[in-house]
Image: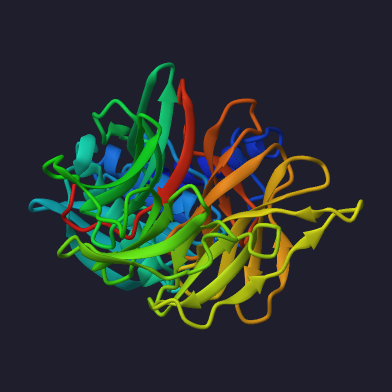
Amino acid sequence: MSAPRRWATAVALALVAQRAAAQDRVIVGVHGASASQPGLIVLAGPGLDSVRTIVQRDLMNSNRFTMTPLNDSAGTLRAPLDPNTLKNLGLTWAVELQPAINGVEVKLYDVATGVVRQQGTRPVDPSGVGDTRLTIHRVGDQVVTWIGGIGIAATRIVFKMKNGSDDAIWRVDSDGANLVRVTRASGVMASPAWSPDGGTVAYSESRDGRWTLYLQRLASGTRIAATSSAPGDSYGGNFSPDGRSLVFSHGLGTGAAIETVDITRNCCAHELTHDRRNADNVSPSYSPDGRHIAYISNRTGTPEIWVMDDDGASADQLVASEFGATGRALATYSPAWSPDGTRIVFGRDTDGGERQLFTSSVAGGQVVQRTAQGRNEDPSWAPDSRHVVFKSRRTGREQLWLLDIESGAFRQLTTTAGGAQYPAWSHPLGTNP
């Protein structure tokens, strides 16, 4: 038997064995994955085992493909890929990675025809260690883009982690690896948010009972306090899509208003809502075109989702209250606008006493419950508008979980010793650390 045929037989046996094993076990941390998606395999030349493993995981985490990960021996090519050896294995796509100068050559094969549908060379650090992992994540995103989707691998999530007396903002890669501390201050942290270019994180810090909103550059670690219209608490910042403004909540002890500040000059803060004596207006979230802001207001007596123009005009209720079996209005929290502009995800109290995640279409107002196990809140969208990161207590400890809205698949992101809260998902990251 020739070497290519022996290799193809080994791949086929590995696929059959692993698929059979999958029928008899539960994959920890992943639930609800669809089996109707196109089959995809990742194969690589010698020296690219770490690259293949990360790309393989990224494509699996996209929830767009049916994949059976291969071990190093089955997934390593000893010669250029012959796509004919992959026919009759139930695959739609094959990704071939081969060493190139300062990177990898990536080819996407249509397995049925054996044709290379897309190819290119990407700069990659094959070690897969530290911040250079992003170069490998971009390979996975390139494959997703070639097939017609939006990649989310080359992204990061910031969140607040509390471990004993240590309270700080941290960041982690989209696959749960490369955990890095962001803040060094000694206050109580909350509500981090990414700038559109990925170079700055806004977060709230409380010292001596007063909340201050800070902007911190990730490359240098330097930070400044964001200006507000008057003394008081500033918290819950959210960047405008062009990165020039920050919208946030500002309280003076007689309610809270939504304000905006020009962060290019750190000036000109002014209120957008003008009913602070009668309501708390909090948790603002820009629409992806920057023309509207969704937020929570209790002006009717119960926290509900409202929307206004970016200048504060034309305020209107976006998602009405839900009433429980006893007639009690169920409070709503933390709305986040999807990047494609079609949906809002938010937390809401339920009759069962636990807070759960819901989505509402912006156009029609159709509300769908998305979680049911444990307490789930603080949602944030991925750039593909189908994945959401959120805080959950389903394991008994506050950790970050991911939900694929389309397939219903869940994946645990963090297993930190301390509690993980207030996650925020970045845009795709370029050269910023």
